[in-house]
Length: 281
Ligand code: AMP
Image (cartoon, rainbow, N blue to C red):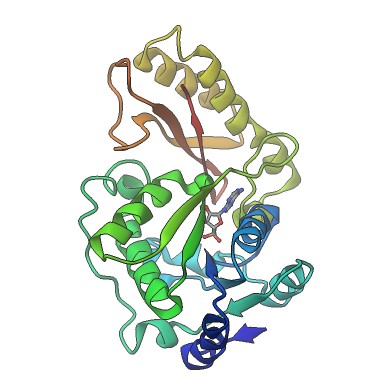
């Protein structure tokens, strides 16, 4: 069932609440793929009913052309969700239904989680993410909400958001779904040419190699090696590669025992921006 307005969604949700059903929530920007569906399936396995929001959130885009070109395929998304077993309610609002008249973001202090990597290269991105999720959480009041590790920095920011806003929701992290050659599934992959799609396998191969080499080499050596890998490729341009402490997302300078590290990468294939990450130890 699809809802464009909070009011009708609230009504339907209260029916399920009265039946003591728990509510799982999967926020998305649509153009759904197997990665999104894996989150919805997990949510269905742990809840009585699941809400999937489909909303391309304007306030989290720092680039107008990226927002304009973001793939939109609501009819196809609805069909895909209907193939799943279980009750899925789709919330696909207009900006005004969530934001009211002013579609602007609130400013958040996520304790530094918002500053490196995506935060550094997409100014204001996490303010937009925090704002829309705060509005969505308050509109849906889910018991659990599901987020992909594909956007690992976002996952950490959301955990912090829930603390800051004192929201009674459990955040569940879900593994990254990948194409057969390793590229992380993404709505943006639709915009890649066949060659770009094939070449983008280098992102995963590079992360795997860094994971393999992590014990033997320094952070500086690994970062230099990654730069070289991408400088040799005519189809891909490295925006950043970072090794950071998984919990705080502070970029690592030197490895210290006891810390859990993760590699983070952003790459342009033509105009299409792709991100990925991987646990290193
Ligand atoms: P998006 O529609 O890109 O905003 O993504 C909605 C949710 O799906 C986010 O929690 C993403 O992290 C998650 N997601 C996107 N791609 C993948 C993937 N390849 N594997 C797992 N989760 C994903």
